[in-house]
Structures are given as C-alpha cells and as structure tokens.
Length: 521
Image (cartoon, rainbow, N blue to C red; front, side, top):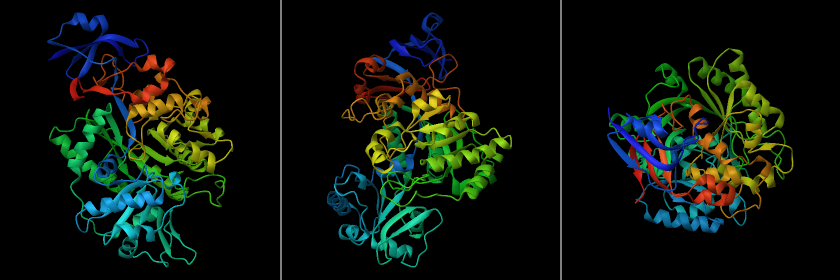
C-alpha cells in the first residue's frame, strides 16, 4: 500500500471538527490521517503542495458536458450585443464550416441585445447559406432556426404546437423560426452527421479539472453516458461522474435494471431528470402571475398528471429524481409530485433543479419533504436585471440561498454550463457577493440572500455530493476520497477584505484520488 504525505501550511478540510490542517496522509486514494497523526504515521513519499490555499475538490451538481463539449466546435454568441453583431459572428463561423455541416448551439441571448427582441428565420437565412441552422439560446430553452431547418422538419403554419412547447408565429400565422421548449424536438427528424463526441468530451474533462472540478453530475443524454462509459472502461476517466438519465430514456433505464447509486467511485448511476417548465430568459418559466409587460405565465413543459406519473415511476424503480423548476408555479407543482413520492413511503433522493423563484410559503415544504434545492449562483448575477424587468416587485424568494439555509433546506451548487461558465469560483463569488464581475450592483442584488464562503463551498462540495447520495467525498478528513485543489489565493482571507477577488482564483493543481490530474503550466 503506497502512502503519500501531502503538506501545506493552510489546508481547509471542510470538516467541522478540524477545519484547518497542515498535512494529509493519503493511502490508496483516500485520506487516512490529518495533521500530527498524518506526519507521524510515516509515508513512502512527501509532496509539498503549491499555492496559497488547499481545499476539497469541487463538484458541479448540474452540468451539461455533452452540450459543453459540442460548444467547443460551434459559434459563440453569448457576448453579442445586437442582432447585427450576432449575425456577423454566424456568417464568419459558417464560412469556416465544411459544406453541409449544421450551424448549431450558439448560446445567443437576445435579452442583452440593444433591441431585446427575439430574432426570426429571415435574418438567419441571410447568413447561413445552404446549410441547416438551429441555434440554441443561452438557456437552452429556445431554438432559432432558419427556413431550411423548418422546411426539412416539415414545420409549417399548419403544424400544431406540441404539448409543452410553442412554435412562434408572425402576424400572418407563419412560423418565425423561434421554437420554444418541446417544439425544439420537432427538428430531431432531420438527419444529422456529427463528429464523434468522445474527443470533445476528453477536452472538456481537462478544462473542468483545470477549473478545480473533481466531480460532476451530468444532465445530458445517453450518448454522453456511452462516451463516459468508454472512457471509464479504458481508465481515461479522471473526473468522478454521476450520470443522470433523461426523461425519454426512463423506460429503457428501468428495463435494464438501472438504479441510482450503482457503479464505483468514479462512474455512477444518478437520478432521472424531468422538466416542469422553461427558463426566465425565454419567458417560459411557469409563474403564478403573468410576466411584466406580457400576457402569459410561461409554459408548463409537462402536464402535471404526466409529471406525477413519471416521477412515481422513477422513484418506485429505485431511481432518484431531479426536476427542473424555475418559476414559482413550477416549484409549487413539483413539490406536489414529491409529496406523492413521500406519501408512498419512498426514500428516493429528490431535488428541485434551479428553484429560482419560489413562493415563500413553499420554502418550508422543501425541508419537510427532504428536498434539495439544486441551484446555480451564477444564474442570479446573470439574470438580476431581467428578473427585475419581467418579474417585478412581487413577493418571491428569488435565488434565495440564505432563506433556504435558514429554513434548514439543503443546498447543492453547480453551474448549468454551458448556460453559465463552469468555473466554480465564479459561482462562489456570486453566492458570497450577489454581484457581477464588475461589482454591480453595489452591495449585491437583494443582499439579504448572501451566504458565507464556508456555506457556499459546502454547497459545492459536501452538499453537491450528498445530493446524489455520496458521503465518501467532499471533505479532507479520514476515510474520505483524496480529491483536492491548490489555488493561488486564500479565499477565506479575501472574504472579509476583498470578496470580489474570489472570482479571479486560479487553480494551480487538481488532485483526484490522491493523484495529480492537472497542473497549471
């Protein structure tokens, strides 16, 4: 058995009994002793860790690595500030693509444009040439398609809106090219050749390790599961991956005997992911009252009786459940399905994904039902002006980390990448300051919902792991897996003096299971 002593003057363990130490003894991938016990036990080798601080490796509890990997080969429209700027980026990208290859992804955000109006197919036709274009919005809940995409998918003025979706139409009834929620799936009938996913996923894995992530809960589909399984079988999977099952694959997962928690320390079966509503940026979050300046209250992505039936199907078959809910009405309804799970005596792990805007009366229901609020702090700082504009002053608990913790609700933090950047230090900064990178707004948006750095790190480590049933990782304590990162600044010192600098943290080393997985050049 190999024993390695890892030393550093300032190691934050995340363990309440011994929050700080200066030594970790690692044996076969686990911490077996800390502090004086570690130094005195004897080790085959000693490593002096670099940087200003060592802390547990971080877990992204909600990330789409399939999307994120594919985005590496697509046009990036996040920073476009107008329709014209977005179109010019699309034109330049299309000119570099092989003939016939789709224009995909994009991550456009019309809410940031000079004229914040969703675009149409005619604008996209002008720059996409003779190729299919289907560009996803930054939140992934809307597709901007060109005329060729609509034609090949058979979408016309006579095509009805699917359940849980909407085909936007102009004044004459013709499709505009905007497909919301489940209407995006109408494009699935178009044949599409894609480059193999695995090389992109390997690049993505290395980027996540460089960001300080040692484990993730992936939300994407079966193609991503298969790629991770291949990587794991070949010993090339260095991240710890808990892999979700998507709603359309539930029956197949049940038939093959898939159960949450199956697997090993590196690759495990996770929960089933359902959708209750859309997103704030697409104006499809399901609200109890209409958006300011709009007639609608968003979209119920799945009828309640169907959502209830499928939630119970998963839980009865040993699969945990995570359900997307952003609007207050969506959160209320999802909690109703979870009440039914508990009424049957089922002990499945239950999470609400995002829980962005919640009726205050519903917060105690999370605690009573043992439901985790799986949230993404960077959504708050990205959406704060939009939330003010379209939700207004109504009394809701919005991105309410403090309120959840004070009510005894467990938090799990992630990024929802590629909707937001996967860098967890961006999320820590947002949780502690509720400010953007430029310090806006002064004092933080709804600052009463700020939380401490220790609470935020807990949600990115112990809380994130426990939300998928893992208690063997997240702390640097005896018996825990030796996942840790060395960073260039002391975050706890910065919390009191310069919290804005937390966002700029650079990861110098990432260790997974006591082995160096990334080192900054």
